Length: 379
Image (cartoon, rainbow, N blue to C red):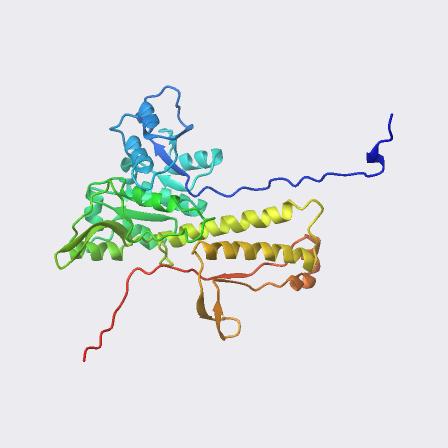
């Protein structure tokens, strides 16, 4: 036989693994009551993913709350590609048990419950607490009698008031007198965002939701909802001219005064940063050195994420006062304070634990303009 060339040139292939993937911030789960399903194949504590409302109709009668919630998500504008429905176990003692079972089975971001569940204040508070702990956004759709309470300036025991007192970031209330899924229509705008695309991030303010009736609200009702951080879909009017149907006051119940986009975009940023840093560290075919060169790889990865989120308009430029030295500075939208050489000063304990130097970043949100003030000097 011929002399094998690979005895002279030995090639060892080192294949880099795929690593982690990014979270799907368009994923939504509807928690259906066990008695609503008509398909024998669906049992409690199981899930099924639907691509069209016609598929949902095969398992749920179109008069059920589950079907209505699915129709709000899959239909209209923007159009969503799929939704998951989880069959709840009616024997579970608090709703938290149901949520934990579902989260143990899979991950989702948008949490949607039927109107019957959200009509119970105690249940909403339990769901909101779970969503806050699990970084999953609760769409707190409120309609009917509860909306009358929310729109009452003198009422302080309504669900919007109580959630605002609790200060939860991962829940927003959409108040609509007749539409029990109005907030689901609003959620779709955020779920449609592609964080890899330029100028893709949005604000919920002023978005239109075909299929939701615009309400003609009284001044006292508007003020009440603004005070209680409840979003509403309204008619905007000026001197007889009307813009029928705009979302307004699209805030969460965050004690930090955050709008919905503030919370969703930060969740997406954290996920992207986590995935990119993990893959940069785990996919090295040899090792990432515990030296300035290894630290620089992590810092470069963090910088790439920051630049991506400038491109998609989550982060943006501004002047700010540096809290470290009190000097006014300009930023493009983020600052990385860690240097590669910082790893040289690791403690013996951190070096033994094979840690990198902590990566310190400052994020500056681009925000969104929701109103403007004009000063006129007339001569």
